[in-house]
Length: 366
Image (cartoon, rainbow, N blue to C red; front, side, top):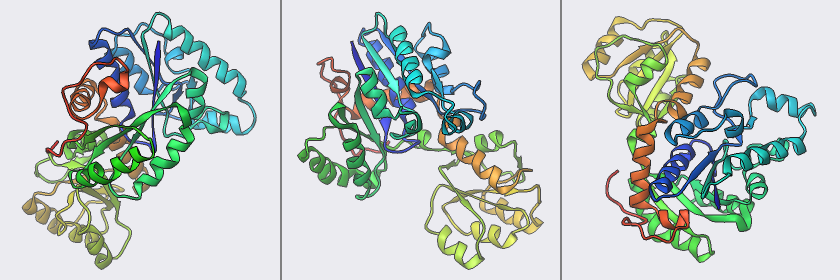
């Protein structure tokens, strides 16, 4: 039996989609596949009884007959971390729990896919970082990383050192078109020159990278103040807490963003409407903007969302929606499977020896 642990240099790198897509691709090749996420990190609340949504999705998509306490033996919630800091969690017992759950899930399986939690170092407080888990479960490690600029390679090298001899290879995910050529011609040869296998370069797909304004409004329970189209994608958020002139310089450099600010800041709202990269305004505190702002937004086709929550709460919720909420479903996994088929060495990852039809890199548009 083979065991592959999918981890990443940072959070929100696509671990769930990649892990489940690989599991489905392996099943299509006739393998009996199991799944496990030892540390549940994508939680709805901070109480220990809360379950991670990723194992629940895996159980559905992979048709697994397994209990949630085995699929996710450790609920890595804020409450759990606090208890660990106080010495109320036993690392040895936790490791035994993870091992027992793994043995139960791996019975009669050809391949086990292990999804890491958070990033590479999550779990260190109880001796269960992803490298620790890989050692415990005798797994090879597939390391995911984003790439936008050369200095991102530093994080890859540091992660590779942490993983050590268990490294299966590196998979670059959600790579922007502008970074593809440099990654292909400079970074990949550099890494391979250091005997670090690069198993794929997957292009960025906007439908996987962000959330539509309309979906964001639904998730935030926002009132839409304009009749503008809600199909634009938002990938990042800016907080309006600066002067108009400073904000204008900053906003002009961003793209696919939403400005989150109070409804009582018409100066910032007006500036944001001048920036082409701002796809919507999210106004907090229930403060309605002046009619002139709404009229200008209507004219420019920029949606305005009004929420009752404060700015900090809104930011946390909005970032959670973009990071993990709306794009993790069967359609996402299907699309990721197609991307891996076309842009990664699936046979090399799964270790089945078959040739894939796609190439590792391709600069066609996602």
